[in-house]
Image 1 (tube, helix red, strand yellow):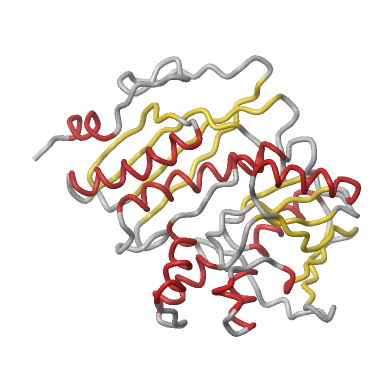
Image 2: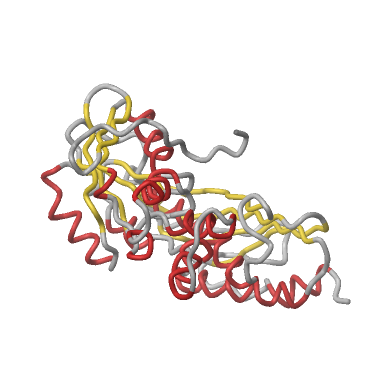
Length: 317
């Protein structure tokens, strides 16, 4: 059986092109560009809490990095490097080969390098820290929303939660419909290009990891504003749109694991928002507006206020 350092060398040690020093020393060395601030984020994935034991290893490697890249996207940061801390129940070479394949494929697609980390024995736990760079003073933050701003969201929402409900046995899908939802759950696509394109256009941004209502609440709290959200205008897949409206609303409003961008921008920048989305190749939907005061009102297609029954994900709730 291969030992710890042999597994690291086999699956996680690759030459670096952007970092000054990568895997192999006590520290990696990064060199942000002139006039750049370093953007840093960390996310942990725990088996049974953030992913099911049935997920294929390559998809798990993809998702572990994707959820971190999504944080860089929300700040409008260019990816540079990442570290990986990995606890494994056993030294499983086949699992690691698949995991590394998915991890490195997404890393290569976004020009980000693995520069260090740690491995140990224990319950399956994946912790990635990402490093990016953004021109000083240009990062997208949660605190910039202003009354009158439009509220926008990228992509489509709800498929990840729909897949979870199928696994739980509370919803039923078969064939390609289930595969579509499952891809949303296991293969999220971080909107890095959109985040970069929105610098100087969006007034605030956040990535959707814990459900739209909960994540929007963070923006409202940090910005000191309220919002009106048009629930039935939120984008969703044709698979989800064919299901009962109550399930649709649950999935798009409080589903979690979407990893799309929710952002605000002044109405005068609508053309700029659409141009940024076009450059990034990502659909965006205007779904509400920022208002003075506090709190969130969720409206249906007829303009009626819906009960405030949706909550974001809370690890300790």
